[in-house]
Image (cartoon, rainbow, N blue to C red; front, side, top):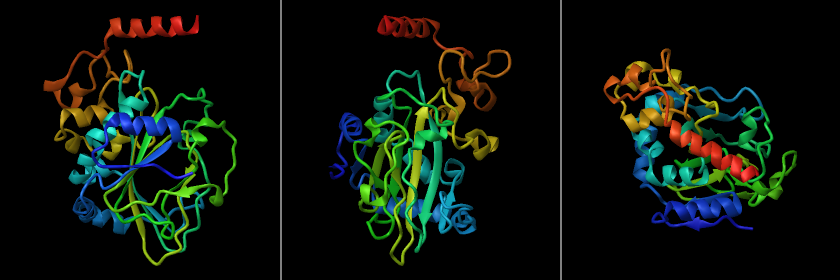
Length: 290
């Protein structure tokens, strides 16, 4: 089975449809290669200072550089890309809001073996989410061309419909081969892993992941983005990185204040959310169960 490739003009609904069917899809050349170069230039001091991974899973020849919202203004544009946000909201429908789950440049060095095939949603303490209920939407943007030889992310299409505990070898997966500036979308439930780098080049990709706002973020955005930088960010980005409400009553500060009151008081609302909306969701859930 092959991964579907969509053009840069694809709509969010097209991406969501492919994700629900296959668990993954590639959008070709969504941004210009020069955008990837600009991000790489902004991040060069941190990329150079990042150590390789401490274990086989993270990759002993792989460097993982996070904190991208704080470190790269150009990367913030990728985080807020309309197709990424639209597809995420479509895939994670039913939640009051979504949030940024993690940001990371993954640089797989020559000689790195293939990563074990896994599910990203296992990060939530291996909780057995109901079949078909997606809790996160992942993207990896190609900072370099992704090929089978240089460690392109490998996926098992259709595996998002299987249960936990499945085991796959590298040969059971297919590489997300794509040109620089392209992006692969994949669900938190699809089985995947970094490919083996059998080339002489470093494969670099930007991993930006989104999740339902009632789950804990993998990357702590409140500490990854210092308050002095947070105060300079657009309101929509601030809410996405965690300063927005997760639901009716999640994320307020002290005396029911909106968290935005701490960083951008002029943009704050009351700490609690829409009670009528929360009640309607509760009634809808009860109807679905009856």
